[in-house]
Length: 359
Length: 70
Image (cartoon, rainbow over all chains, first blue to last red; front, side, top):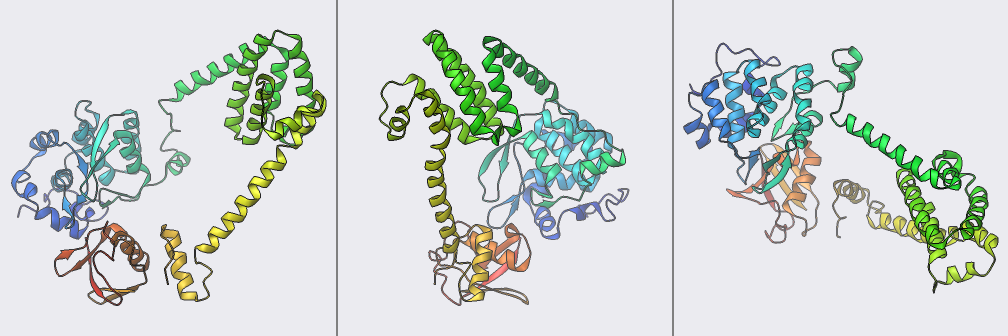
């Protein structure tokens, strides 16, 4: 009797709303003590009181998969089917984060696609911590916005298969939703403006800097790297030598830092290494590396030329053995075992992240 | 090599003895098409825990286990 859905409740996605939870999990919830004691005869108002007492989120845990009180309350909401206004109130309330999560979860299960995106996306701004009980019974730390992200992107959460909703870009294409405006967008714009200002300020220190900076940004730099870099570096060095040594160091550091940032952003590790080597070359007195000693031998121009070509060779030498090792590791996977059955098993194991079979 | 069965579903899985029960569940899930966390492996009311290896449970070659769903 107590487990029947409210007869006035609408059917969701063509079925009894309680059927959104799978049969086995549903049976477990009905047999749960919390459900029998606390959730008997709950209405929307008294449900709020129970929800405020929640202190963790989770699905089922333990060997026999015991459901959490959170699960029981979700089930109760599916059973009594509160109005949409009530659910939105749950979501909007700022004090009780577990009530918010409960409302969000229920809306994700029962709401339309547009509603889901509209009401759940503002919750991305909530950074509060949540206690999540995992399947093995241990508590882990998560955050409200992480949980909402899971609800919106994955199709399984807290041991319930979430109903399919349309992707955001589909809804945008139809026109039901507007483009997503992140709350951090303003912050990003500020950051970008600040970056541009910083670069301008550094650029004012020396004309050379600008040229280097622009070169750093241009995508064709990779191709012309050897030629151009040698040229301007040589010029750069002469120019630097004319100035104060201290000032040279300071601005080189800045300039390298900026360049480093650009490099990081564009992910060209090799360039950074070269430049670091360049920096070291100008500042350190004692160098014991054989490579540098080799470089020290010419004058600046020859040094520059060798600077461009010599880094390649040690790196090539480094990369090739690594590649060979990777190839060897793949063979160790066992996926090329003569017996096709075992090879197949090993392939499956590799895809699951397990070691190959020992035979 | 282990055998598992639930009702009429018979799943035969090849694995090492230092694989954990969790790994075994993943292999069974890959073969039956269910989710690994929905599977429960038992032997007569003893529910096998995920983090213990087959060797520690003394599950030998050809032994049968019961496969249930959570």
